[in-house]
Image (cartoon, rainbow, N blue to C red; front, side, top):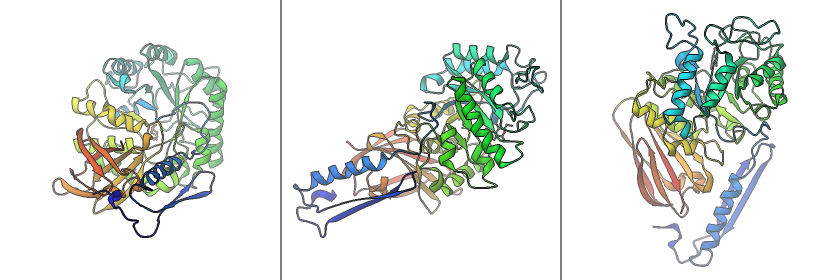
Length: 453
Ligand code: GLA
């Protein structure tokens, strides 16, 4: 039954009121009031709703770092979670941090379909450096592990049609104890640009004050811009700030293309749960500020490693898409099972992550260990993820009223629903008044896309 099938005026005028807060600090209330009468007001009503949705979702976010980069979340590969700080190339030549490792990954990103679906940035994390700067004060790569230097590696990576990311630290030392950039921001920015680097992950260890931390992150952003090279700037500024004071995300967005808020991801379900919990608990503060040019970064994808079950890997992929998170895999592309590879290369899920509207999703509700998350997409479509957090028992059914999704606007007057994960299947045609019954595995997620005709 459709809401709009009645031929009489239904009661008092229906009043729809939406309040939205934009990052200039003001709240705006938009109200549409009209009587529902079949045939006469109905088309106008629908048009008004669609107009309302367009207006509602088109408010500009806060001003982003003006480097034209990361208009959708960055996609690529980052070594840290899987390879950490293994510098012992004698004992472990295949997994130590060396140019060989990155060349092998670049080769595979190009040949195994990763680049084709959008994974573009091959990123070095900590432990690439020699213990000392050179005689001119420049950072240098460890000569044994990177005999061709970073410039040589950048050339190789570029020859594969990929981009190279590097790591440094705003303080006196990196987290693993290599030379920090404090006092060298301009030199380091220039060195990275000269080498042909395309992304900088800037960590926040060993910084002696909040002032140094803030000024350092800003200084490096401006220094990178001054080089004239397009370098994505990935910050950990808010993560290091939280223990002392609340970060000013509007300001952070003006300097960084993405920013870490919370602890390092581990290869475990507990870690994924912690990240999701932190994100939903802080969503009022962090969701609105994300948008083209600047994103919240919940850390790497650990899909394809050891710690997550299949359902938990589905949950990570689905929720990273909902959160508009950078998709930086940390896994071994030389040894990855076909199921994990297919999940990471799922074009429909990647399309949600990369949706050009660039609105981050949020948790809509938590009820009886089921969480419902949703994200507005371009063309008035919505992504909806339902997570089953109950770690006992089997698959559970969950029923949701379609009208409760997308601020009431996900399916007006009807829509087509496609399940994307754990497997793709068309669920069909639904009306605003319908219910949707879904089965979700323990610790798994069902990811849906709702599109109006
Ligand atoms: C910090 C960061 C990690 C990683 C390590 C490297 O812990 O949060 O992502 O870069 O440092 O030492």
